[in-house]
Image (cartoon, rainbow, N blue to C red; front, side, top):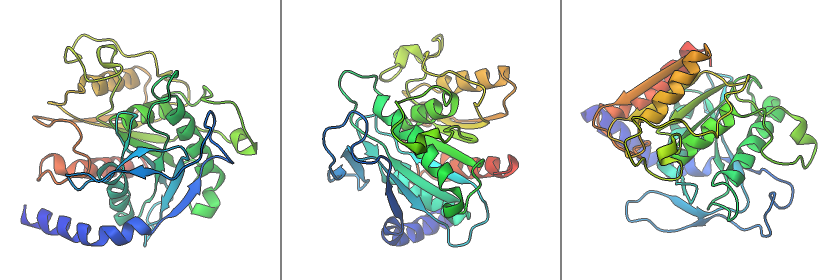
Length: 295
């Protein structure tokens, strides 16, 4: 435990510098589809010290390169926030910092929030996610990555977005706007972390009946480009872990390699916040899985 605390303190000391060590790219030329304004991200102060962004009209791809690269993979990171905001630090930059420490390139995607009125909750975010994959693949040489080693991971609503990106890449989320949209938008691996809105009894909020007897929502196509996955969840989560179980079961029926970690007594939203030696090591499980899978 002492070593964990010391490591955490060291990470907190370097985080402000890390947060600036990024390359920021706009995902769309001009306005994003359906938008009428183009504003800077809006952030509100939080009592818990965590960064949360509450309005994004101009989605961005924020690249973090490791000091000593050990992998030619790229991980796209989708912070959670109920499709109403973005948990930009403990489900965003902190995750990128971990991956960079392992020699892996990462990109935090600030997709559009809040939910757009008159559309599915994930409508704008899903378009941004597909565009982000295309942008990464088109710039693979520039970023020093393999175009067929692009993965995504996300948290809560970002976990749902991860599943949309990973299972439904053959379904266009938006009308093409330029040449970039000719680039394929499939990902090669995915890590949904306590994904929300996976089961019918919690398709827009927390699960009403623990998810034990609920079917999966129809959002996910599980198409021919669905990649291997590593799923992370807490057993005491109000967003039922049975959603991750259902995804794992579906992947098994498709003979797609999958790994599932469910942590006893753990609730929702832990991200990269300090949690001790139990669930606090969850990201190590994802990293070990990536190595086993060749990413």
